[in-house]
Length: 135
Picture 1 (cartoon, rainbow, N blue to C red):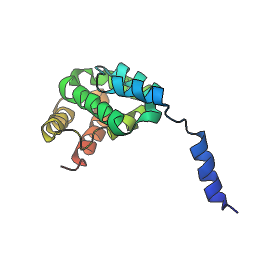
Picture 2: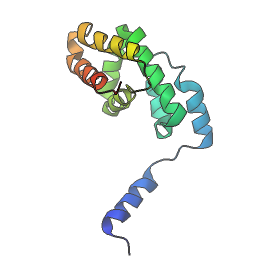
Picture 3: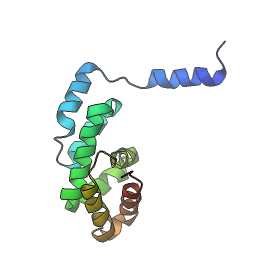
Picture 4: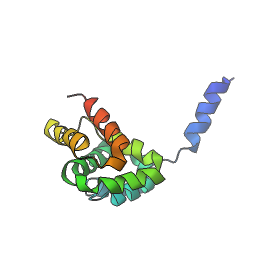
């Protein structure tokens, strides 16, 4: 007889959508080529169930590129996370050890010194996340 907690875990796992081979191939092909926050959000929305391995590394690369090279678009990220709070968790999750120390330093600098006043809380979360990445 299953304990009630195990039965609930089974139900939760059964309700999570699986990543099909076709979805994984599409997600992997686009993940590291994403060049804007809206593109990253659309990919996340379609393929979040595929977020592991090479696909996750591609998302991390795209997030790092946005934070390090296109910081001026941070307001677009702010608007997206206001509408879709789970997207913020996804983005912060992809500030990880696959990003070089040099790029992490750039992200930290941007978050501390180039943050729009309206996004102070988001920038603080980015800064904290960068500081917690193992180096």
